[in-house]
Length: 322
Image 1 (spheres, rainbow, N blue to C red):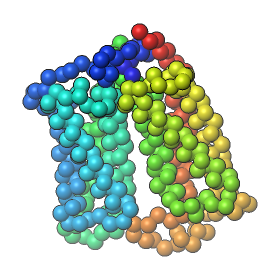
Image 2 (cartoon, rainbow, N blue to C red):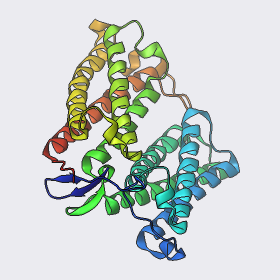
Image 3 (tube, rainbow, N blue to C red):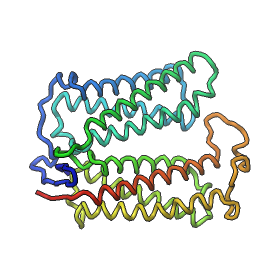
Image 4 (tube, rainbow, N blue to C red):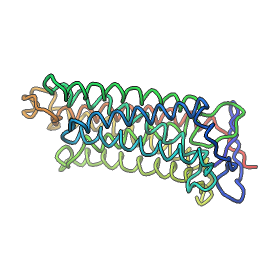
């Protein structure tokens, strides 16, 4: 959905024939010499070096190592595609809205690389013995951090400014949708199997909350990427406001129930880390159940704050179709 952003108003416009809401741009090698082009070359180089260093010595094992390797390979591949589209001027032929796709991807990539830059050294590198593999892993972590900064810089450069005609995903609520879905995915990763919540209706409700809110936020993102917000039976602004309000109410229940039933001994939880037998031994590539419960509690709080901010910003926006 193309939008014009002012200080308090977002004006929605109806895109023309192509449905992408962006003009056709003739490709040119000079695109690589522009600041944004150079930034994307840095993203491409840093992610390429990161996964190459790790792959050359096989320095990845287990779920966390696989996640980090996937992150670097995925970000390299999509950044390469974006550069090709920009060079060849194929924005109008791209199947997704070019107003929304690059910044949406850049925001996801920044979060992906941030997670890899934290997870990889803490769950893998610290357990490696000194030598070539450890040196390569440390260097890969450094380049992952560089990639994270590069993607975050792109988001800062291309986000909506007052008076600009841009896509919804470039606005603060749009970027918050990316954060909300990413945090939900990390929650799902920590929940893993049903052992953390099965046979406890309150905890099963929390998992349902995470799933429902994730699906709704993902739908909002996909509608914008597909430039098909007009297919909703209600206006898109009403959908966004209702989504944010519902998510805040649902997460408000989860932020109470999850810690209560996971850490209160009265409700069968473990109030101390040492009381969880699985956390007594330090094991490579393994996150014990108590740590996973704590991580989910923290991420639940983060997402509640994100949805609160989303609700506030969405309430301040005014959509005017022209």
